[in-house]
Image (cartoon, rainbow, N blue to C red; front, side, top):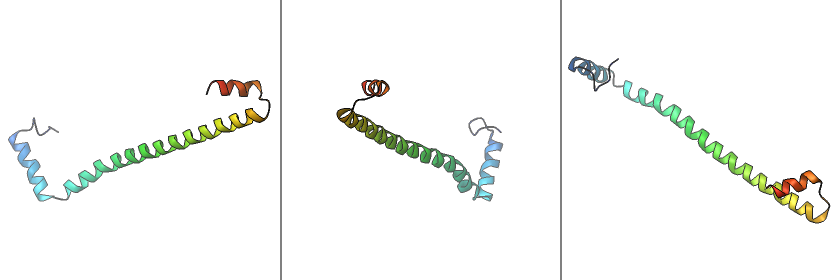
Amino acid sequence: MPTLKTATKEDKDRFFNLLHDEPWLIPSTMLLEIVPVSIIAYGFWKNRKLKTQLKIEHEKTIRAFIERSKSIELKPEELYFLKHI
């Protein structure tokens, strides 16, 4: 199907007549374009929220290790973890 830029006058007339005869095509086409965009936006914000929760849990883990290191002796792998935070 030719695009509107390369379409002939005849093709443009058929296109605009179709839209004039079937006006419901415009909102339904827009809906088909909006649905994937909304899914992508939802996924982006959900991913951002989960990353924030992961950072919070990471900080809690670090604080727990630091508190534990003050009270008792740490294992070598725990010391390695604290050095490479």
